[in-house]
Each structure stands twice: as structure tokens, then as C-alpha cells.
Length: 80
Image 1 (cartoon, one colour):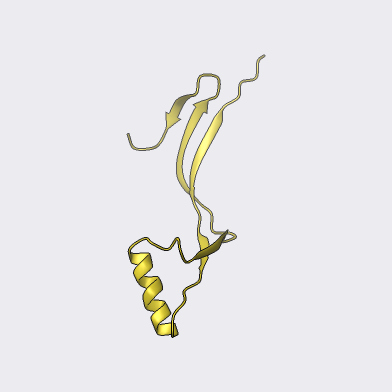
Image 2 (spheres, one colour):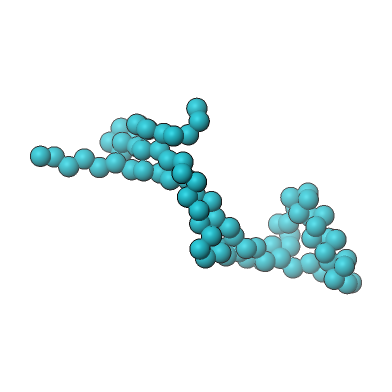
């Protein structure tokens, strides 16, 4: 009897905490600056580092099964 291998890709969500630094004259000014940068998706210049928040990974229930020999997806529950 042969043994066949498959790969199952599961989609998950996870939270990351980013650390940022803003130079300002007051906390109120710093809050306004970081909010404006976040709204414009322009926080690259304030970014310091990030870390994954432990125990925040959630399986969405979405998956695909692949045949590694053919790289073919043989089953997917994702919407077409």
C-alpha cells in the first residue's frame, strides 16, 4: 500500500502590536499626529518594531487542499 502526501492551507487571522514614536510638543499633539498618519496609512516613518500578540491567532475556517505533486488545488471552501 502506498502513502500519499497532501498539503492543507488554512487561513487564520492574527493581531500584531506595532510600536511607533512621534515627536511633538504635547501628548495631545502627538495623538493628533499618529491619528492623522494612521488615517492616511503613512506610519512608516514612525514605526519602530512589531510583535505578534500571543493567543490572538484565530482559524477562519477557510482552507484549501493541495496535491504537492501537481501543485493543484483539489478542494477549496473559498468562494470562487
